Image 1 (cartoon, rainbow, N blue to C red):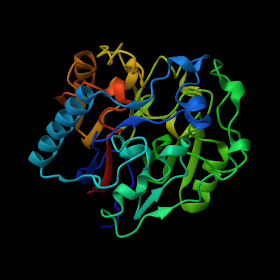
Image 2 (cartoon, one colour):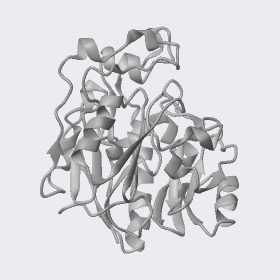
Image 3 (cartoon, rainbow, N blue to C red):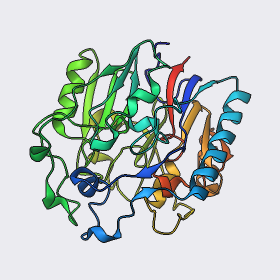
Image 4 (cartoon, helix red, strand yellow):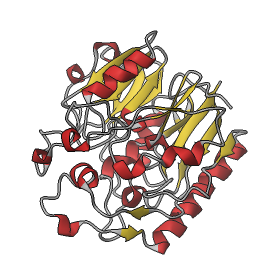
Length: 323
């Protein structure tokens, strides 16, 4: 199967949904320490080993609920290969695989223990283009980022970015420069797609991915996180003429004690089924009402461990085909 997707909102026809099996936090190396826990000055607060079984079981239940809903919408659902046991997890395929036009790309991920996760998706695509992975790790990471969100974890020694640093809008790709995506990564992505324009977004959010900061709902309409985007002028000019929905204060779903891997703003990490329907975390009723004013309906589904595992409906999916 080839990918056939150019944006975030056209009617969804085929999608990958992740699994929580074998999810774990690996032994802390430099990349994990400086990227996922850059806000922690001391490493003794970092848990290691398998996630609690309750988290895995309940996350899988919620993922299966999502799959049932998608199938009810005549959307084909595929899952990662369970025989590929991850060093981190296969819960968030969006982090690992970038689909754009006819390509499926395994990006040069910021966390070293995640760079083989693409193998769990090999059986889904005709081929996956595996970008060169970082090799000079001693030059790639900047330990001065600890406790300072104004200093990024990645230097520009070689291209490095997670797929979830990118949003698609037809001929435009929006790329968040952050702890999981450096400028060299954006430049390399531009080389891969010379007929499209890669726009970097800088100084908005340093922690990790773009999809809890911006959601592109349909052509000309976007949802923004007001805690991070303070002015439309911070965004590329091609987005500045879009209509904006400023996300309301989220309902905080909480997290399993000791395992917080996402902020409360994971609430806007939604999946577009089509330009008039999104999948939204079931407690976000203020956001649901706001979207409804813009003729965007919401399917309210559970995702109890979105903060615990670090991903809601956009993160746990990868669109393979949109109409």
